Image (cartoon, rainbow, N blue to C red):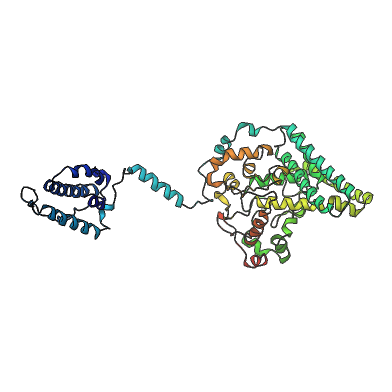
Amino acid sequence: MAILLENLNVPRAIGFRAATLSPIVGSLSVSRLVRRSAWIVAEAQDIAAVECELRSLPRIYARSRNGALRLNSKNSLKNFRLLDENVKISMIGSRHWGLRVSVPMSVPSVSEEEEKLKSVVEEEEVFDPAAAPPFKLSDVRAAIPKHCWVKDPVKSMSYVLRDVLIVFGLAVAASFVNNWVVWPLYWIAQGTMFWAIFVLGHDCGHGSFSNDTKLNSVVGHILHSSILVPYHGWRISHRTHHQNHGHVENDESWHPLSEKLFNSLDDLTRKFRFTLPFPMLAYPFYLAGRSPGKKGSHYDPNSDLFVANEKKDVITSTVCWTAMATLLVGLNFVMGPIKMLMLYGIPYWIFVIWLDFVTYLHHHGHDDKLPWYRGKEWSYLRGGLTTLDHDYGWINNIHHDIGTHVVHHLFPQIPHYHLIEATEAAKPVFGKYYREPKKSGPVPFHLLLTLWKSFKKDHFVSDTGDVVYYQAHPEIAKTQK
């Protein structure tokens, strides 16, 4: 009997198990045992049919009108054995019968099923980075802790002091050792420090260095002039960049070319603009003549870059730049051109490479194409959300976390030493509009591949449309292989 019930595989909801029948079986006579067993089998079938919503097993034994089995005492044991064998044979031949289906312990409610379906649908939805974000700029601002907006001039000056001491220390050490094994290391280190100096002057230009405009201007001029950057000329054009980030025509730096403008470029200009490593040497030429399709100069107060009341500032910066250039020429006569090339010239070009490398990747190189806007589709928030953060490993601290760029682009008045905290606070608001940067090793070699891939496929955008994406020119793509 136990074997029979175990073969039935009756769910627990039926309320009995085969093992519990042993004491009962031992206390019954044969005839009563047969009747009780038949009754149990019948009831088990009926209950299983109700619980599992399956049809009952066909009756394989005879019943009288009053429900008793028609068995005589002489043949009781024999008939029961036949009954037992028949049932077992029937069950063995039906091993895949539906009674193996168990009744669930609980049935999910309609609301639970709806929530599950909703989560599956949300996972399958494709995120559109060009869609208007569901939050406002004020929501992002409110998420950033208040102390992140506080500018500490003493702390800012401590970074200036640190970087200036390192610059002079590297120069003195390299001159003292004067070894061809040391010089290449010096060039890389000093060029990186020139880049760090630029970032501090950049903070002065944004006003995130301190609340004192005069202090910002003096420190900014000293820092930028020392690396041949016209402070006010650059400051004003960089402000234009932030105010129009993500706009095809109005953005100022590393903005995309329209297809028409791209096709109008001569072969030499196209080669220098899109063939590595030439674009990484572009900054001095940009200061002198801006980007393709734009006119003017950062040194010329009459340039289209500036309005009438900014001319005096531009002249001041150009004079400071000229003074530094004159000093460098004089040092060439004192120390010799080779010595100056090794101490200043080569580090300067390393700095230029760093600047072009980092600023280009602020707006290019993501695995998924990022939108650029025109017309009514552009907004300050949507344009800022197309910028990218990058991890530079050990360089993060050296160049003052300038790779933490999304929050900086939206709120350039936040000091660099609060950018990481501000970004972490803003991430829940950004959601998928924030693209988590890939983790870097000590040196960000992985970004070289990112740069190469971008120059292979990011060449121009359509002449029409308010939301556009970079397209690749097949000939240029071949040259980048």
